[in-house]
Length: 212
Image (cartoon, rainbow, N blue to C red):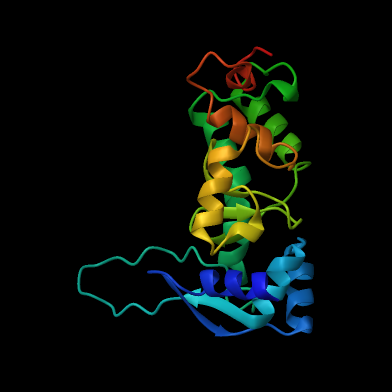
């Protein structure tokens, strides 16, 4: 539980989140069933120790509070959590519609934008569903998943492995020595590699532009 405890501390500290008592096994199962996703084992262990919630903010006149980026696995705001789960795929679809993005593995790009979006949506429905950790960070359902930082098709590697969270020395060392694409998460690891080579001569930079 040492690694889970470190991850639990990381999840429950920061400028935008604090911790409350951890989830029971029944609550963990209910969250997975409700959102049709799977928590990696280490995340289950960490969430059993502490459940992160948004840090309370005192209302200020004229200040609009942004929607929370902290998932609520206790289902008090299931709609918001469902929105967070959908952000990675939704961001890719936004770039398909607005920024002429297309992924080579999807096949020929339809000329009509409506068909293009529909085709991309079908393809994205087949990729692994990622679990939001807070902010722009997401992880897949396995413990050795990288931690991705995702903003539309700009996908970065925040940590080579989920187990590195909370240990900045290990996380930084792993990032420096990592080869692209990090991890083995279908589509998301490849999109991460593409995003980090899209402006270079590397073949990885052509994954989404008609080459390879």
